[in-house]
Image 1: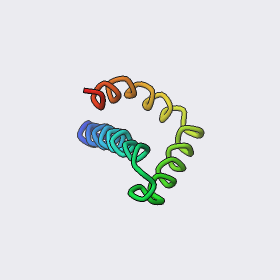
Image 2: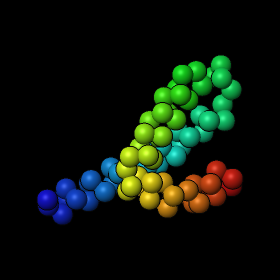
Image 3: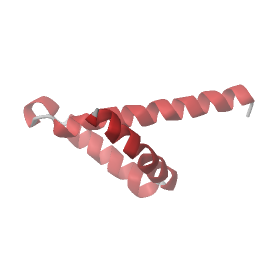
Length: 72
């Protein structure tokens, strides 16, 4: 893998991680607004966090900064 491909892959992973955190705001939305998207989000996240050790690690590493960002 070239250095450029590796850099792009890492950037893509960071982008997906940020999307997952930002999308978690759906958990606080009323049912009539969230619809089935909340169920889809939680199911996918549960799948990843129960089958992928690296996903669990990354999720917990980014949790504190994300919570600080949401609170601020």
